[in-house]
Image (cartoon, rainbow, N blue to C red; front, side, top):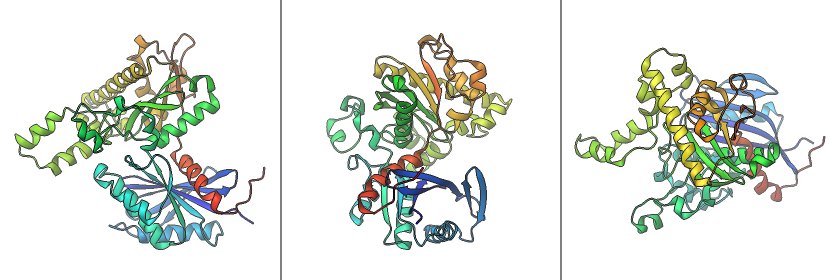
Length: 401
């Protein structure tokens, strides 16, 4: 008898990333992964199995609800894998606030608590809520779980998590939360498996993609991170501004007469690499461009990332390794080189040939700081956490070799 299937959903602002796993008692085993780009018309599910990609046209259209899209996708997957039903679904949820310190089964009560956190993350949280609701509407008996990006950073001290604001605001939840936690959790586990000596030390992980942040790990535990109260903070991103003097917001509202909605749109969607270059938020396009504005945008990004590496090294009282991950971190040698060249004073030195080839380790022998490239896998973390919650409730066969 085939093992039941577990689906994982990694909802972005305009995409749905899908993981497909066989649910065994000793762990979820990946069968494939897929993605739906909600900004594309007509919609399609791009599915990858055993390295082979298939594109499945969808007749559903994007809208306020995802019911039709998810219904069509679930129906196709059920037929394709020969299933009577799908055992469960695990979701990435960006914000868990102070309520969620780990994964949870989704109930009416927990979903209401997740939805109550929408004001803390208006970009991602509403998308997760509508996806959970769509699955619940279509498969009301299917168990769902939530894995939270903020949970990994609950190990940080209050000194790190506090803003220099009145104490009452901290008690009311105005604090550093940190994000990309599922990615950092995966990297920490892979470091422990592949490089145990490095994993026990002081490591800065740079999750550099369209959304970007850095995290300071000590023995695999989060001690500091660059994103704080919102996903706007830290280093500049594809379209988000990164750290900004709050006086700029006050000036735009009071002196320029901007509405807060206009400010929000500019900071989230018109800033970052796109805003500085006026060309694109994609580092691949910027690195390939001869336009001086593109070069300045990349230089600014590298400067700000390197500055944050140094700041996080201060939190850790030293630095033993840097790990680059996510789209830019894994695949953009020119960006990594620009960052590392600014950190030579910290003992960082990389091999140009290894860097150009995206090899797993790119530091030279003389470097006092190890420099690694590591693929992240948030869907695997979601699957592992869903497995831990669902297996005790189901009889599932153990995987065979």
